[in-house]
Image 1 (tube, rainbow, N blue to C red):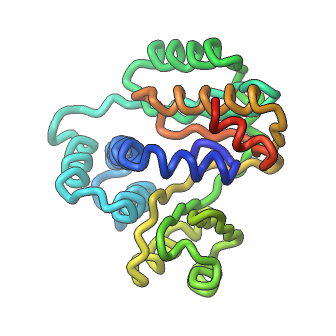
Image 2: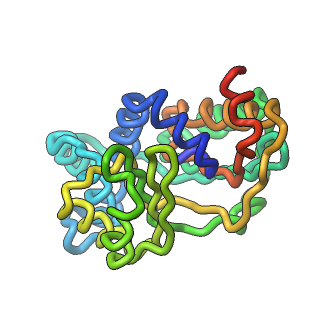
Length: 251
C-alpha cells in the first residue's frame, strides 16, 4: 500500500492493476524465500512462511512460483542472500515514509532509496526517526462487487478485523497481525479474492495535504520508490484533502 489516502489508493489500483499484481508476486516470492531460508520449508513449523503462503494464495500467485521460491529459500536452487533492510525518511510536507527492502546488495539499495528521496523533495533519515509513528497491521484491499460495507462487515469483523472502510469501489480491511491468517481464510471461504493481502505498517496519525503540488510530489516519490527492485513495501502517513484531488489528477 503506497499511502493512506483513499483517493491515492484508488488511483493506484485503477491505473496500474497489472503492475501492482506483478510487483506483488515478486515481493511475496522474496518473502517466501527469506522465510524458508530462516525457518525451513515446512509452513506448519514456520509461522513466517505460513503467513507468506497465505498472502501468496490471497493474490492467486501460481503454485509453480510458490514452490520455486520455497526451494530457493531452502537452498535447493542456489543459496538465497537477501537481507531485510528498513529505511526511514520524509517526503515533502513533512510526510513520514518507511521503506521495507529485501536486498542482495545493501549498498545498492540505500543508494537507490536515497536517490529517490533526493529527486522527489524528500530526505533519508536515520534509523528510528519515524518508525515509532507506525504499527504493524494485517491489511487487505478488495475491489469489485465485494467492495461493499454491508456484505463485508459481518464476515471480517467476526474474523478479527478492527477497521473496515469502503470508498469508490475499493474496500480496505485492517486487523491485528495475529488475525491475518483467519481473515485470509474467511475471505477465501467466501470466494473473495483481495487485490492486496499483507502484514504491513499503519500510521498512528496522518498528515493532511492541502497543497496539490506537495501532494503530487509525495505521490511521485512513493511511486518511484515502489518501482525499485529491492523495495518490498512503502508506507507513508499522509492523507489528501478531497478539495484538491481533482487538481492533482490534472497535473
